[in-house]
Length: 169
Image (cartoon, rainbow, N blue to C red):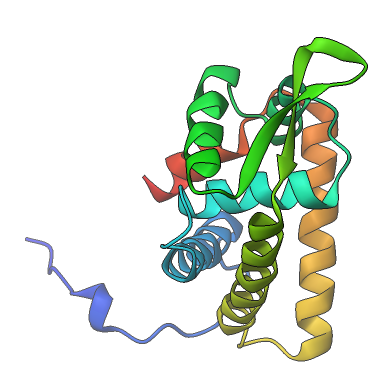
């Protein structure tokens, strides 16, 4: 008969060759918990945050382009935008170059809300990565961003929200 040990009570000790996937999962789970908490008053929390950030910081010409950029199904994006619009954070405007298309534009309130949300997310991310020195945090962020861009470049239809949902599931 094998002995059952409660591993949850055992302290985690760093070891060489630790499972990379497990490590990423732990970091991602903690990031998700922290960021969802600081964004809980924003419609759709981190998803709403990502939409608002892209609308403010990038030149995404249409709602369809926004869906492509965020790798979110267009029908799902419609509901997310509806809620952000109802909260007064964004608005749909006719595209002057193509009156059949809609541009998603941040309102002044949306821009103010995003500045506050970005500050809260940055603090949450610093807490998540607090076990690293400042230069390690910067290197980690840069490496993860490069890896993500490489993955999306190689498989542009990868839905990051679905991937995160599976990991956090």
